[in-house]
Structure formats: C-alpha cells, structure tokens
Amino acid sequence: MTRLAVSHLSASLGKRQVLDDVSFGVGAGELVGLIGPNGAGKSTLLRSIMGLLRSKGEIRLDGVRAESLGSRGRARKVAYMAQRREVAWAMSVEALVALGRLPHLERLSPMRASDQAAVDRAMQLMDVTAYRQREATALSGGELARVLAARALAQDTPLLLADEPAAGLDPAHQIGLMQTFRTLADEGRSVLVSTHDLGLAARSCTRLILLDRGRLVADGMPEEVLTPETLRAVYGVNAYFGEAEGGMVVLPVGLSAPI
Amino acid sequence: MSEARLYRFTLAGLGLATLVLFCLSLMVGPAGIGFADSLAALVSERGDAVALVMQQIRLPRALLGLMIGITLGLSGAVLQGYLRNPLAEPALIGVSASASLGAVIAIYTGLSALFPLALPLSALAAAGVAVVIVQAMAGAQGSTLTLILAGVAVSSFAAAMTSLALNLSSNPFAALEIIFWMMGSLSDRSMTHVWLALPFMLAGWGALMMLGRALDALTLGGETAASLGIDMRRVQALAIFGTAASVGAATAVAGAIGFVGLVVPHLLRPLAGGRPSRLLPASALGGASVVLAADILVRVLAPGRDLKLGVLTATVGAPFFLWLVWRERRKAA
Image 1 (cartoon, one colour):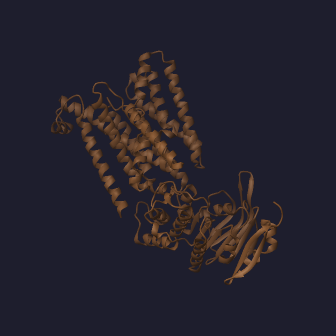
Image 2 (cartoon, helix red, strand yellow):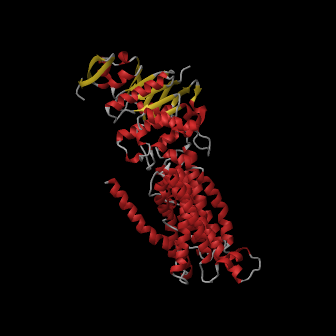
Image 3 (spheres, one colour):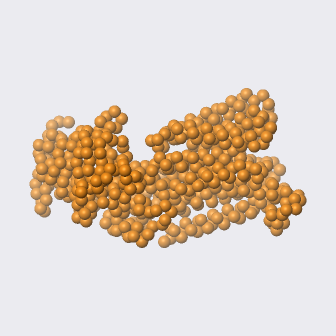
C-alpha cells in the first residue's frame, strides 16, 4: 500500500495559487527528494500534507484519509521538520528532542523506557548526544538543525517530511543526514525531503519530484529528472554532469539565460 | 539528573515559602494576637473578638492573597508560553482592564453602595464581555497576533471608559473611591469575596494547568506543535478562557495587581529548565509567595495608612521590568 498518496492537491496563499493539481505517491522504503526553484511550492506542498494549510484534493496516509486520523493520530504517522528553525526558551537539547515523543504519551503519563530509548537513538543518529545537557538556544545554526532533526526522528513515524533539513549543515553532516534518511528508508520507513542541493539529492534519493510554479513537472529516478534540458528550463542554469564513487554528480555552474 | 533535582528543590522551596508566608499573613495586623491564639481562633466557635478578627478579616485576606498570587503567576506563565514572549502578562488580553471598568461602573452608578457584591459581580460581567470579544476577534485561525491586537483594543477602550467615568463623576467621593479601588488591594475583604472568586479561579486554573505539554511543544513554533498533534485552537481557547476566568475573578475582588504575572514566570523560568510545563506549577507557587509577601509588606511598612498592594507591586515591578528590557536588549545586540 502506498504510504503517502497525494491526489489532485491544490492550495493558495492569499490570492496566489501556489499548488496546482499535484498528484504523486511515496511508497514504503522510499527516500524521495522534492526539488524546484524558490517559490515552486515545495514548502506549501509539505505543509498541505501536514494539514497546516487549507488545500483542495485528497491526502491519504497508508490508505486512510489524513483528515480522519485526528491531530494525534496523524502525528503518530507523520513527523515534520519545518524550514524555519525556532526555539523560544532555553531548554536542554535532550528535553527538546524528547518533545518528539509527545504524540505517543497519554495525558499526564511520564516518559517510558521505550520513549527514552527512542530519544537516545535519535540523538545518536544526529550526532548530538554530546550536547544533551546544553541549552538549545546557545547552539550554532547547524547544531540546532541537527537537534531539530533528532526531534523529528524521535517521533519514530513511518513517514518523515523534512523541509530543507540540510540547509546550513557542514558537508559531513549533510551527507550524514542523508545517510540517516537512507537508513530509515532501508528500515521500511518513507522520507520526503525538500532541498536546493541538486547534487546531494541526486546522490542520496532513489526518486526525485520536480515542482515548477506549483505544478509537478517531473517525477522519476534522479538521472531521468535531472537532465540539462530540465535544469535550463526550470532552474535557468547550466550544470556539470559527471560520476564519482558510483553516483551521479550534478553541479550548477552558470546561468543559461540572463535572469 | 541535576536539572530534575533543581526543579524538585525549587518546587519544594516555593511550596514552603508559600506556606510560611500564608501563616505570616495571618499573624500580621493591628490587633496583636499570639501565634497559638490566632491559630486556635481560626477554628474557634466562641465568636469573641479574636475569633472575629481571625476568621472574618485575616483569613479571607490571606486566602485571597494566596488565590490571586496563584492566578497571576499561573496565567502569566501560560500567556508567556502561548505567545512565546517573555514580556507577555495576564493583562494583555484585556480582561483586567475590562473587569476594572465593570467595577468602576458599579461604583459610578452607586450600585456598589446599594449592595456590596454589585462591584465584583459587575466586574466579572465586564470581564466576560471582554473575553467573548477577544476570542471572537482571535477567531478560528488561532493567530496570536490578532489576539494581542484585540487585547490591546479592548484594554484601551476599557481604560477610556474608566477615564470617562472619572471625568463625568459629579461626586468627588465616588471619583476617589474609583481611584483607590483601581490601585488594587486585599484589605477589608470578606469570606464572601473568597467564595465568589473561588469557583471561577478553580475553573481557570484547571484549564490553564491542562496546557503544560502543549506549551512545551509550542516552544518549537506553532506549526511544529501542530505537527506533534497539538490542537492549536483548543490551546488558544483554554489559554484565553482560563486566564479570563481566573484573572477576571482576581481583578473583581482585588482590583488590578500588576507585574506579578510578568515578573514571576520570567524569574523562575531558568529553574524550570526553560520547560513551560514545569514552569506552570512553579510560577503558580511563586506568584502566591510574591503576592502574600507584598500584602504583608504593605501592612508592615505603613500600618494604618492603607498602602495599596497594587501600588507596591508596581513600584517594585516597574524597575524590574526596565531591567528585563535592558537585559533582552543586551542579549539581542
């Protein structure tokens, strides 16, 4: 069964139509990259799937209509990493990561051993265990990004939506993050991740979805989606294509037409 | 875990402080009554002078101090958490100003002279009207900005109406009474005030205490909280109604007591490890301690002069607020 099925999804921000009749599915074990230029509708798509925006169309999670799950039911199925990284209070990294367990806790009941284990594993995967006692407001941007990723992993859901999670990370942690997503997919989970790093997406994802001005214009294997013609048409760039360590290399090198 | 232990010490310390201050509040007054005598008089059924003083003057005063302190500390912590702003306070949503206006109307029209409960009842009614307006304005979308703007508008209107009442007051005594009432005080309250305020406060506290985990999740922003299964509309409704019921009742029986709801949560936040869910009970106890201590101070500092509680909390609170702003500015720089 398709883990996430999006059909005929349209959404508007104010009077501007941001998503126009988008349909696709994500299966179990898939790591799907969501790409497209600024304003293509990537974040709007992810937020619509989360029910954070009003949208038209249908979203099904494991075959069930998302609206019928209720907010807690949905939170046990999908975790979401927002693009905007926000922490209001100086709480410890461990307490912050533990927030990911909220959908699994009954009212007033404390964390169980299994919850703590999920928190520990998430911190380990994101390489933030060493900061567990530090205040989250005192971290660097990249450190905070990894802590927030750990928060989403602690939610331990079958589906993970991540909105530009790699932005602001150093190269090692970018690759590490995508490898972690790969591991989650190999465990049978599904990950949909938006990014502007075409090279990273090409090397890590099994499938790419390309949005342009609210429409889905390509959906397929990285080498099918990332062609010189599409990059020129959609992004307006010329790119260097190559191969290294058994994977595809895509590097935008110049503008194909004056902006 | 040192953080958890620090928090337990904080709660225990604040609980002890509240208990001690509550007992002290029962001891302080113009009639010098010994410790043992006063405690005995609290439960005495003889109806002599000592029993009367204890049961009908000091006990309601101490109880109201406790209840109002809990209300201000708790609602301040909830609003700061909900709005994710350390400068938020209970008066922000317009309930305090509206309750004051209700009380002023009762004094202005002379209703309060006809029967004493007219004042708090009128204040409660006005607070109710305010919360309906604010909630309707904030609407189903749950926007915090709209909530703040609606609160400012309602507060300004209530303040303007209060000024109008003072302006048009033909009776200087009524005007004086209005001014003194607005300063906020716990003197000359009876058990009737306690019984009037208690149900509203209990309902309000109940609503506010349910918000701990939701406020924890809100630390990461509204959308992430929603993605964690938090129903943001429910959170907003509970925050508004809980604050309105408890703060409305507090203002109705004691007038406006400022800065406690602003300062106490801010001071205690580091001791709660920055977690709103832990801050709620700590701030409730902290608020109770501060209001009880301030109400003891007004009696000790100026016996016989009826120094107003709200004047004292604002006198101490405003410089603290300045320091707070200064520190925030330095942090932002």
